[in-house]
Amino acid sequence: MGQSKYVIGLDYGSDSARALIVDTVTGQEMASSVKYYPRWMEGKYCVPAQNQYRQHPKDYLEVMEATITEALSKCDSSVAKNIVGISFDTTGSTPALTDANGTPLAMLPEFEENPNAMFILWKDHTAVKEADEINELARKWNVDYTKYEGGIYSSEWVWAKVLHTLRKDAAVKKAAVSWIEYCDWLPAVLTGKTGIKEVKRSRCAAGHKALWHTDWNGLPPEEFLVELGSELKGFRANLFEETHTSDEAFGTLTPEWAAKLGLSTDVVIGVSAFDAHMGAVGAEIEANTFVRIMGTSTCDIMVAPENELGDKLIPGICGQVDGSVIPGMVGLEAGQSAFGDVYAWFKNLLAWPLQFVEDKDLAKAIEDKIIPGLSAEAMKIPMEESTVLATDWLNGRRTPDATQNVKGTITGLNLGSSAPRVFRALVEATAYGSKAIVERFLENGVKVDQVVAIGGVAKKSDFVMQTLSDVLGMPIKVARSEQSVALGAAMFAAVASGVYSNIAEAQRAMGQGFEKEYDPIPANVEAYKALYEKYLKLGAFTEKEL
Image (tube, rainbow, N blue to C red; front, side):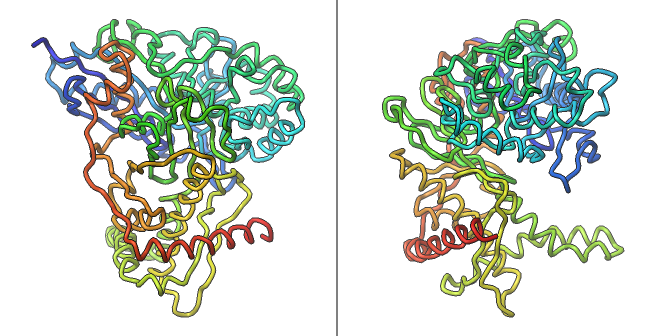
């Protein structure tokens, strides 16, 4: 038997990037390395009170080199010699404005400290007004360019962010001629194909977030964009018409990057995609499997055969795009704007007095016990005593029917409403928000045969997962791999570099199966049906009256 071939999956999250080296034959995870973005960790360029979250491109490049070289240093030297492919996944939509050379403006000396010249992180909500304008214009236009994006465009997506930034910053507007998602920029940098017409744009990013579709030959036409804002004049000509699925090669490593990383210039770099979509592949997604990536927010991914979906449009989701997850199938995306973030908010609320504790180690030790303690107590509360009711919209609503304008609510409080009871209501609220998404798929004829969960919350919280299973009335499998997202990227690297001919083959060889299954408790399933109806009523009231 010949020498094993290895691939590297690079997973770029909100706070850090992870490099994972995987054996393509066995799926064994050889080594990994995680690095936090240095400027981001200092809180630079962000104004949370205004929902402004920006990341410097240099953060991405520095951690790319550091994670790959550190992960390789943990392996035998023969591994580096036999790396055949690298693929990225990133958060999104996280775009930056570029100059005519395709360089993000923050990489130029005159813009290096300007947040408007940086990558605008997915959770930046500064462009709510522009998203509303896109939706309004799309309703009036002869073609609704949002129809494959669930019919509602979000402030988290590229066109809203670009328009907002061009309006806000005259110097940036003067210098900018195009934009790029960082899932497209990173492989462009490694291959040297950074010119605005050289970049192989991700089908996943363009289809789900940029209004790209073959029905209208790519991006919306110039007249639509200019009607939206004169600031966008000329941008379309400096963008793209073609997009590419992640089983394709983007190019090979440049000599410069090969030397930096200690790899060969034969290493193939794959076309990238967003983290949730590659995470679903790492979790062995197949038709009619509902994969939940459960962290600070959730992203939910499904794939449906084209012949099953036909020309059906599912309203209020985050898009349906042919080939965005698995080439040859339609990728469907949904998700919640806040999931783990809801629990973190409550923890921070309760931990507020700890700032007055002089022993910082003691304060940290207490803070670390809050969520486990709340979970243990909340689990003991009998269903019939679960009288507090909440909505999960503390960060607006992503799906179904995106709106950043709704707010979270808690009702049914009395003087006996303890912290564990309120926490239980918040956990139930996040489960009800999940059920609303599943119901939207079911109402539109998309079968949901099984639920698979990955991510930090899925691994850590039996209470959250059991509650979710009870509310959905479905079993939930938890993927075994600690790093399903990076593993998904590695699977795509194996296909792009020619080790496997398609994703199904890579999944069979490299997949790691499941470590746990939660089954719904029948009595709870029935009780939650009634409570879910109350959640819908509270949500309708909140949205209309508040």
